[in-house]
Length: 463
Image (cartoon, rainbow, N blue to C red; front, side):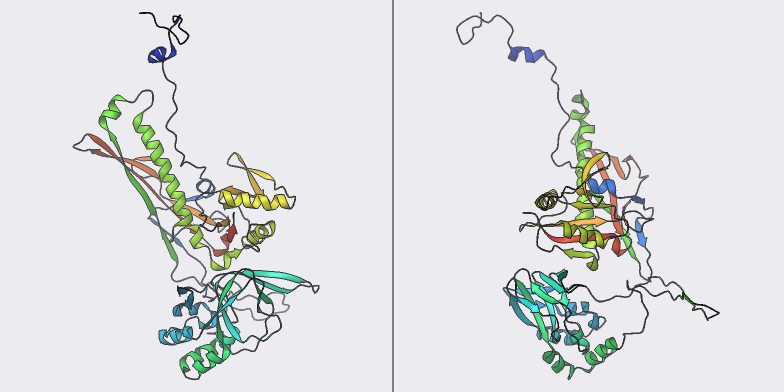
């Protein structure tokens, strides 16, 4: 029977629907939106770890006790965790839990609105102040009498440690609330009342005021190497040695694994024009590599966001990442910074700040691609750096390589059935349902060789 078209006329040639049954379809390999550029995996120098663990030997360092304090809250009532008071330098090493608990109970909670003065330059220091929540600017006098911002304090920071050792001091700066701020304050009168009854605490604080245990250290808290210079004649030269950390940190390789299952009928019959097993394996490996990069950033044991030294963490001055903030970040890793990493939204926020100031950062080439930079240091996107529900993120800067005492990646190559460096694909057999099983494994970790190899700009507003 003759086919007709819509206008009633007879069809004069073969239709496309019927012709498609004889045609060869051109198709893509399977696509996956999860695949990213994974810049972190590319910029890290990878070090072979044969024994499954990597030990970072360092020069002996003494704990300086200037870390951050942690708090708990019940509703709006905030309390400092007693053991966390040992993060204050004068209380470092004091281990009486009952006294610490009583000391924690003597802190008084206060609230400040944005713009309020918390401590004023020149006024006597009469309280220990713990910053439980919020952001505070330190404003001081510059070299020529002008007001200048000395830094930013945020959650966990503290002020007024001199009160603990009984030293008479005055505030050298003015502390002003930038946001709503919650402070826990310990008045000197409340401390002295406790010291009158606790002789052990009083003796510990007196020892700290008189110079601690007498161990000499440099500006970085490392055991000092005694030297002399600029002398004439024949003075007696000091003897010295380099002391090592007796308990160096060891990084054990972490693992990401999965079992890839392919039915034998699929592998036998549907391998043209693309090998089904290869395509399944390709996407599985991409997913493993994405998880690997996520762990290198976020793992609480070895992830870079959690392994940055507290002294290497700074906060934005106002919220969005400004050029001034990026300069401050580079100052934390001033010795040969290699790369900066940020969430794409944080990079966009920084670009907006540059646009507002009429600045246009240069682009540099890295791994064969153009990337924005700041002061010549590439700024690469990494979507594994989290953005909180409040629109806050972080920006990392790092020095890389063992020779530079930087940040390195750790892996194990030469694995049995290695498919690509550091990743193996092992045949596990065929089960009773005719399903072929492959074990896909990769081992990895990351190490920060010295604290100043990694810096973090926190509280970055990306909205």
